[in-house]
Length: 333
Image (tube, rainbow, N blue to C red):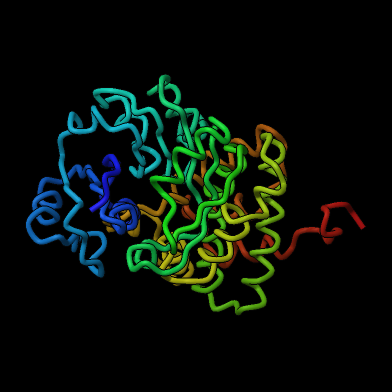
């Protein structure tokens, strides 16, 4: 058992539970907050979370709670609640932690704010960091090798504090100060993963999926750089790396949602039936609105937004394929 101070994790979904398991892998005490009392009871009594991460036998140093007052003395907290609920949960915190690490990917509906802006408004005394990258929860929980971006608003001093708590032999953070780029990469890839799932559901083949990933990445770069993100960040783990992972596997909730849409199921039916959250479905409308407002060309995002709104996937794809031919940089030929 180590003498390190406990770390808190807000949110006991698949990703939050996996992060708690990773943090506890060196014997550290982890306080894991869950909204559902039955999830709290199961984790504490059986060291399982069968609702969200059935594959993992959880460390005994993970203690679940539904009482946010137990986070009052924690200096490092990882926030892993769904993006659209982040602000409301943080505003209930009894005390701002010194370091708040955001692990949710999305853009706030209604305001268009990135999660770091939402968090800073809710807990202005916390120093914000963003953890993002290609991370399937079940693999992280199993201790399989994983690399992520850790973007720190507090620069290298914050990085030095956080890696002591977060870095593990099979969990490797890479440093940047580009919080905007890290967040945008993680948010847009969810929408693009839905698009790739639609392509798979329609049976359009691997060529089409590869083309969509490449053209989607171009959209990510255009949007990210327009908002101040750095190209190097977006070409790294939290951008291109995460995009490749989530656009290629049914382990991705967003890809699975898109695949079902491509197979003919309705968005309303799929969203109502889901226990877990496909953040891309919430991000697509606000991302489309932001892109339009800034006159940023994002046809794939526009297509996903239309499909989520009820448009027929095959017709939307046909419209994409009918767009005028250009150079890869978007210039007319």
